[in-house]
Image 1 (cartoon, rainbow, N blue to C red):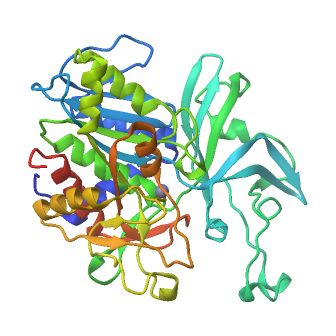
Image 2 (image 1 turned 90 degrees about the horizontal axis):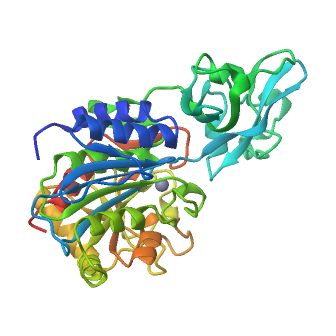
Length: 420
Ligand code: ZN
């Protein structure tokens, strides 16, 4: 693939993360970049063109972009790169204004499984989607709120074990007094606040991503889970030149189980694949044959061994930061990876010239899951779960080695390439 370097890639990842404070923004940013690269945006409710082409479609906070090469026919296989656009954090409740003890407060609900302590004492923005009488709008504010930590003088035992109540201790302050008006502050001059009928709004840390450390080899950023993979997959897709149909599917709601119309357990990907297939004139038999030789790489962040907690990890399989993408393996199929998938991914890493490593859980510390098993179960696609080893997963600010997102991108590019 065209030469860049890991730092240039990290700078582009930082720009992508900054442009993507919510899943809705992320889907929009993927589509914007794809269109800038020559893709045509499609509307799900319109008639789609048939045959070869480069297209992208957004469904709420999810996005699918694909390339049908000129040589494609009814049984051409599909190579899918699957990721997710959402990150754990907080969402505004339906009555967002509150006040107590001289403070204007926001009423928020926990989304997914954030490390609550990492959200304390940070200046937070609000970003997401509002629905008005005239349609949908994306909105984002500047620094507006903060979840203040309790002073140590009022909790002398705090360093022996911080306990945060998800309701009482997580409500941000955003001003003085008791006047309502948070929604008006969020909407700004996008529209008349009185026209806002519904919202999907999340809190966002306002600190910018940055590189740091010895030789500038570390990269700190919010939402690496999983904008890192989404950015890598998009970069690979835009550059790839394959004889297969190549697809980026970035789903919403992975952090809350994926069972939504824009989540991996919903019909979005199968709907798009069916429409592509019918556009190629495939009958049901041909569609099944194509699917049987298709493959999916599901990419999400994984755990680098934490130097302060090495006993939480497997003692012999030791993924390290800077060691290249990880293959995620789990006997209980929390990851979809199997032997054949391992071989396909390992060969792609070899072609890309990037190192590869494995992740498996300590038996006493069960792992999370990804969209991989869900996509594989829904579609029957052979799926391999991969990712980048990070620290501080689900923190408001996560940590990766600068080189690993670039390694992942190169491996994905090789996976999409014709030599597979
Ligand atoms: Zn994730």
